[in-house]
Length: 321
Image 1 (cartoon, rainbow, N blue to C red):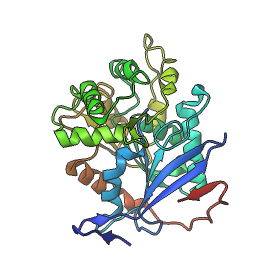
Image 2 (cartoon, one colour):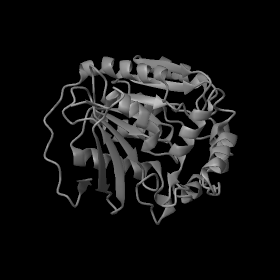
Image 3 (cartoon, rainbow, N blue to C red):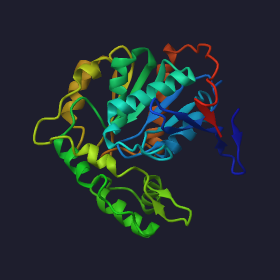
Image 4 (cartoon, rainbow, N blue to C red):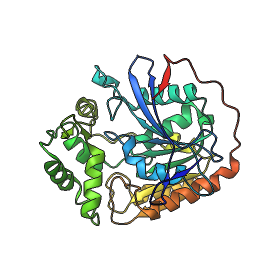
């Protein structure tokens, strides 16, 4: 049931879920909404160094939708957000993260879900379409496609794991703005502050703290950008049987307009969306983006039929607080 706060705004039901990976790391998921919600559940997968906080505003909007509320699961990959860091940096790979996500889907008895993948999350979504096609009922790829532009990848490699932790939130704000101001040309002061809070954890003294393991940068450096990045057309085409939305930021240097055009040619049910004044990757925090995503998911719900879910596993495997 949706409840309402003193301002009249809907307040979602939330649940903090922790579960163990195959190699015994404790991983975190935040769930919004109810298991009994009538619409298809949504799984949100963040970018390379990002976490489930990126989807908070969208998850609130979708889980409290007045006519089509849905459960929304926002995952923190290993080494990000509130999930445990891995002692072996080589495990910060999309394939290992895919295994973690598959384990969560199995533990919760989830299939035929909607998946929203930003950047790295979109890569994992396309991998999931190969390894577990029944898991995906529809997909949203946020500023990612089968072809990754080298310029954008080089830019990301240039700062991942290399930025010192800011001394305070004002310094954190300056760092975030300096890195991203060319990509996000219309973000106001409140938007920059909100985004900065998403990008860092907060320590016991209220100061910025790392929100991801810097060793993720070491894993990323294994990519040789002097050579063409392998494409994922085969993986993308595994999504042909389900509706797909691809979102591209106007200033994106990772997903090109030409790639989106080719995606349209190869997928008969592709919905392309361009987000103005934003780059890699669109923040999905504005009403325009929320409405487009909500409408796409509602249209895709016509193919979804809720099925009984198996009992949840024992507490040592999955637990909520």
